[in-house]
Length: 171
Image 1 (cartoon, one colour):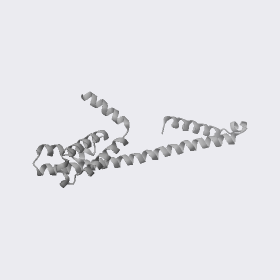
Image 2 (image 1 turned 90 degrees about the horizontal axis):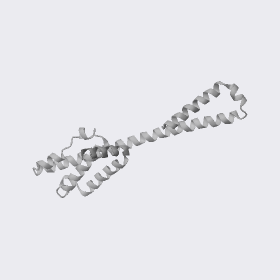
Image 3 (image 1 turned 60 degrees about the horizontal axis):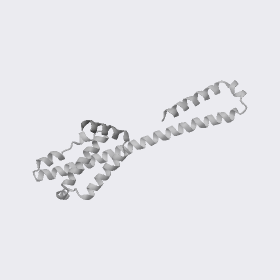
Image 4 (image 1 turned 180 degrees about the vertical axis):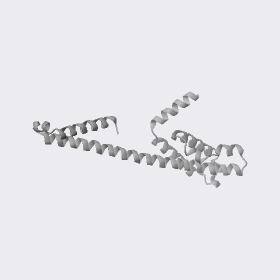
């Protein structure tokens, strides 16, 4: 709901109340019923637009949550499988790099989750030749990257601006 919609709704509502309580004003207007009908239609249009915007916003939130959960699930799946491989070949550095805590990454901000997921994607890609026995293939990596890209495209752009400022400050 925009501030203009709120202002118009309040203004139209106040006018409707004023005209409804002061019938003497309406009697002086030659086309009062037409004006009241137009005013009522404008109020109804604004209210329906507000309801539509709120419904659309709720749908977008739900879709964003589903995408977030899918990226977390994909990252955790890649983490577990890469960790199993690293443990089997006794690669301590890979084991350390592949460890993710689901409770930690599920609480991250969207931008931070994308960074973690891309890091896990890159880690798996560098070891992809050894990981098919653990269920990580080019197809699973393609699906993982697709989920990351979709999630990244769906999040609000102002978050990206904040990340850019943060990265510039670190550099």
